[in-house]
Length: 139
Image (tube, rainbow, N blue to C red):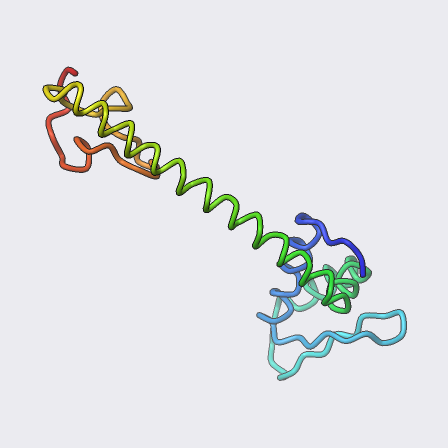
């Protein structure tokens, strides 16, 4: 069982997805990668996909045949996601506590608590005034 890194796995999974989208069955044939179109139909991109898969044959075969390494990568990545989720939840709890404290100390505060005009469009959390759509005037 080998190690699978993120970039390698991402690239090979993209190739394997392309093979599936174009109805290709992939198998090892000795040292070759056998590519079979499961249902014959015209596909103008098939030659390009064949060349891409052939150019990455070793990596494709390794991912296809090393299920244990892929499962190990999935398990490790799941643990990373759990850690990130826990950190996000802890940070959100701290955000709520600090915002409550600020609003209690500054009850006349108006407008966004964390940005010049309003919370960012891609904010994970919005401050209470922005969430309530309150006046974004001076603080």
